[in-house]
Image (cartoon, rainbow, N blue to C red; front, side, top):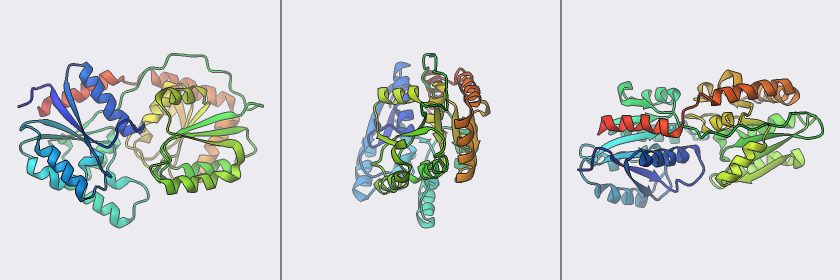
Length: 353
């Protein structure tokens, strides 16, 4: 039987893809290892959370080879689709599901697909000895799927400290204010709402810089480029970037924007806070808790008019930007680090072990 400070992580696909969920998985593993845990990473190939028969067969073969008593942390993107594969090993393996947000809450699903994902994930979660979620909001979503609250632990993602720096004085003068949105180009992230809102603010001096993959949903990416075309050369699409380039985008930004339709936590919000950026964001999912009131303007999810009004306020009012930026820096000083959150996560694993 594996030792008491040993586990394996079951990861669907390439965890180097810069999404919040993969970043959380990767940083937890690295921090656990630094704390003395033995952590093996097992990669599941396939189109998760919609695997085909061959993907499921490969996952079954991999899981079959795990020793009895192995503590398995499964990313929810895969675990939610593995009910039939996990069931034969529910007793001999110790399963922990790491749920960033329930699969059926993805934007753009039709009713049939949504119900299918909800049913499969509900069945899979019955086999988990513990479910770890990234926010109290997601804990409620998981509890609504029938998981007893005592089996749900909240471990919010950590953050990296950003060295303090003097931000240039903000101005609505000749230098355009730089809006930054860091999000994969999918319907759930709300880029279309953002572009519609900005179309009504052409009288203000701004540019929008979008950082995030266009390859996850090429159809959405194409539609967004079409929406951006009337805005001229004010909208930039940077695609996926490495960590250094991402930090440079945060450093160059004046305002961070995230108009998502659902978030299980919203790690980019805390990254923006760490960089002292004023934020304009929706209140979708966990964002209502992730964004402190003193650090940003929050608007109803899915609506263009309030988003446009909030953007107009923050773009037009230098004093407001300064005040929100100060609030962001104050909030950032209270954010937990990755080692701190890995220690909390290790405590949950220790109880299961």
